[in-house]
Length: 478
Image 1 (cartoon, helix red, strand yellow):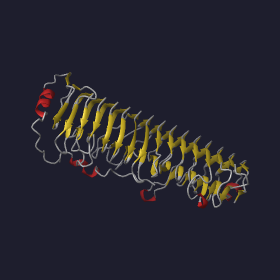
Image 2: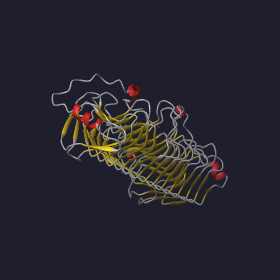
Image 3: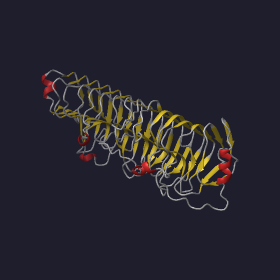
Image 4: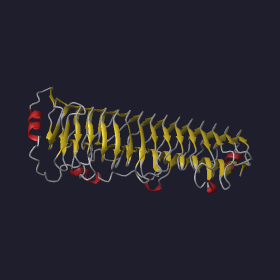
């Protein structure tokens, strides 16, 4: 299932210092003037930049200092290829506010590198533009931290027409809030991963209130390339974000959370109205995740995909027009990710998923699928004359689970010939599996569809297939 990979420019991440040689700057270069201003900042002091355009090369900031411009009027334009305008490596207590950073197609905006964390960084009310995919990584990213970022806040910034937004390794006590991302042309809007060397850290990450449109890859990616490298991330919170429209031919993701057990992913809105169907709205490969109150509004093959991780809770989400499946517990045998035991999938509303409302394609032993409302209108997708839709599609688990109190409805009055609808497609229910108190209904003008399709003898023989309601169907059971 997962197509999460390292960004195409990640392979060069370790060689952060290996930029191309600095090109000569134009005669009106402001670098020396700016660097003198930076050097003159006193302890707990500030540097106020004038409301004008500066042409500059890379600048080194100082700890315990605030650097401020006039929003929309103070512009720093990068003139040195494959470098960054501000270097905050290993600094402490730095605030950067109200400055527009223009990479001018040759470089990035802000970097923290070297061999230690940056502490207490506040980045707010800044604008980032002109960071191009033509630059060599990491200078094709607006803001980069290659070691660690601690006790820091990135808020109320605008990233527009840039190859990538934020790229960070190992974070602790970091808030990324209320930023705007538009036209991210190569990488992710927000990318976070563990440091490639052991660095025990990773508590209290919050990504909230961000929004934007037109993404080439992912809006938010929290990535674990190697879970044994010593880095940790616990219970990140990703909430109240709104992202829409993907420019990838097919491989875009909304949120991909593959690092951070106990992740809370709630009240996000992910939508894609463009013709090219993207891959996953929300991908989760962490244990004990809460996926709650999200809205996925079309344009993705799978709206919510959980793969091979125990005890996910998928609650109260609203899903519309997934081009394959609304919610899937997926199996990746090659990575040994084929168990999502003790999942709870409750009270979700899934409308017009093309092939299945909920697919239990891995070991879902001990799980509870309850109170979901799944509706499908035959004829609403091209090719429905050759489509079988299942409200809940189940593959055999290693131990029993429960499917109860769900409502599955076919809403078209005249579904096309060749379209087939069933409430439950059950390959072979584990002994003791409970399928009860569900309602499967067709609103067609004729009796249409099947309540239960497949082999469910174990459930019937044990008496666990009970009190289901089948309304206006051609067959209650296959």
